[in-house]
Length: 102
Image (cartoon, rainbow, N blue to C red; front, side):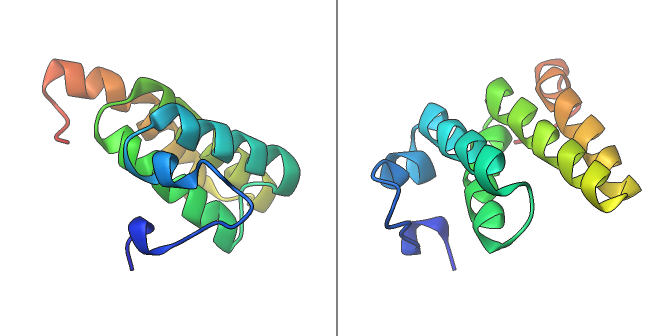
């Protein structure tokens, strides 16, 4: 399944968020994180949209992904999530230096 096949009925800007607008994806993700936390199917979906923008090199999306993973790592006492958070926080720098690939 791709993000394009999924609709979030209560998010009127989801179409933009899942395709070309990183700011919309980030806004939806932050709203969800504040209301429901970093885990669950909806979190997976909205963070998937943020990850798509992060992989394209959007630094803000990388930071939101790192933030969500840090929260998940703390909530679940998950060291792997905390390591992933550190990696995502470094991703924009790695892309600029040529060590990452998008």
